[in-house]
Amino acid sequence: MTFLIVDDHTLFRSSLIVALKSQGFNDAVFLEAPTGKEALNIFKKQWIDLVLMDVQMPRMNGYETARAMLEERQNAKIIVLSMVDTIEAAKHFFTLGVEGYITKDSPLPKLCEAIRAVCDGGQFFADEIKETRSSNKVKNISELRFSPQELKLIEHLAKGKSSEVIAEEMGLSRRTVEFYKQRAMEKARVQTSTELITFLYRNGLS
Image (cartoon, rainbow, N blue to C red; front, side, top):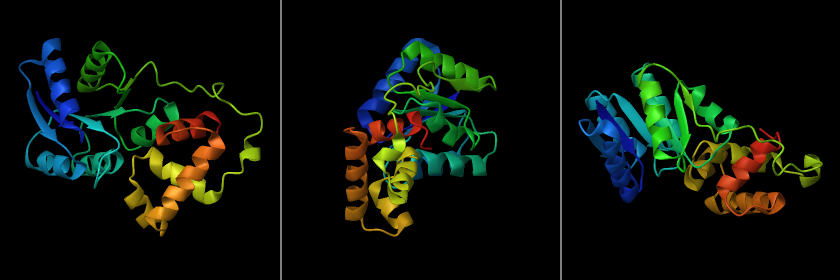
């Protein structure tokens, strides 16, 4: 088998390859790409049995890369590795045709299970990807008064888009995008973009 590991962190890619080799994939060929654009170039030039891909990457995020790969080859097998653990976040990818979605903090055997399931033609949701709407639920979400711009921003963030890309697509400056993001996080009382996305889904704002 030929795997393509797509992640902008060199150490993560190297560690993942070592880990997978220790789990019985020692005969597999592992290719690496730090960006979605480079991954797509590799994907077009040679046969890839399975793509393991991060969501948030520079230049071309995981959502855009997966869409381009599936347009190139409809039966491409892709597993998304994400920090967001909600069903709704995974649905962005499953609607494209991506068949695997697992969180980065999942145990290694679970990732191996996902790989085998997808390679066998199945789909895989990690156990921790659940619709936990009861967690961190507010009594009246309308009281937070998210603006349409803030909600649109969060939708873009959920697809792994960078602030630069969001600014371009929304016709705003990057500074304005960062302002909307900070204001939305303050309203939700969270500290990171990932927590903001999770808050959105858990409270039915998607």
